[in-house]
Image (cartoon, rainbow, N blue to C red):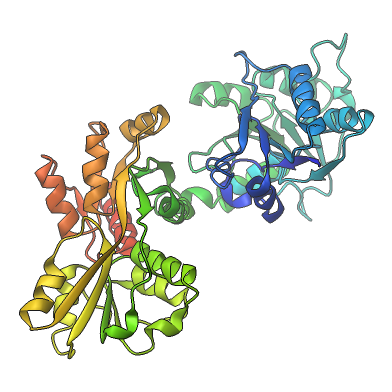
Length: 490
């Protein structure tokens, strides 16, 4: 077996490499640092051993010796081990030391590079570390050397004369001293400088100044670790090329309460628009046991959620059948999300209503002849659709493919919800289980509903929705959030 030294990138989950995600999904053991991206471990196997060995400035931490012993023990046990490190393992990540330890012990290892913060954080701040007109070279240095060294290994005078961009990792606490050394070594006190806090994340902050002023600017604005400091003419480009804060949900924190399997997609869309997404799943989708329905008996098959579509095909697959089982029936989907889930299995829905609720599907089916219908849905769904079809004289069978069960909110999720600007609810079940689990939005938190049925459930719990999507699907909910933020900031 192998120990993989894997770079997790600087913080934005979208910068995790495909190889990193592949190894996380296959690992028996994941030994991870503090500064890995949010959600990086969501793809891990349920039975994987997850070991946190993060180090925080000034706080308790696991020693490097203990980390090494853990890697050796799990490697010798013949397990697939991922050592998941923020940034790149070989750029100020002590990956070289761990590789030497593994090599000396005769344990096979591989290195998976990651995107390093020294390049990514400036890029997200609109600062190219090299530029044809301003910087033909870049140097990466650490502001936090081995404390056991008797003197610094860095020649600050030589670095002051370096003809290019200086990028300093882990230098927040020493920023004033670093800037003074560079100026004393000959660097111009008027040279542009920047400090980038939490680079690549939605709440990234950038302080800009000069070599002489950057420490005072950072202190005044409260910029802290983790941060990258940068000295050089390219730092002046931040105001011109900065792009991260221009997105429509920049600076907004949104809590997502839908099931974890679906939450990641919504969270990714929110992050792409600049939001900080807090995953606080209040529900979990549990498929129910049962045989595949005999679909050839029906002239209409209705799917009322993407989960229902997925669970139907899971049953068909288990029975050795596929999309051809639906060949003789019209297929109706309650909305575009359900239609997309059907397309994933080779089925194009015949009927998709303009209003993505049961009443809308009833209206869309008004002129569709039906003698015998199957409604495939959740166990706890409303009976609006089957009742309406029966009133038309149709014989209707209802099959419950899955149930929605409560997912306890962990302390991090509770804290995230309390601090969020918005909490999103994508179904009545997310409302019921969220408040049933003691979810407590903060006084500043606005409640966002996917549609009128979910809004009514919020009112049943004594909460008036602040935002309701006009189009009752995920894209409609996102559009409503963007519009509400624009109104509040405009």
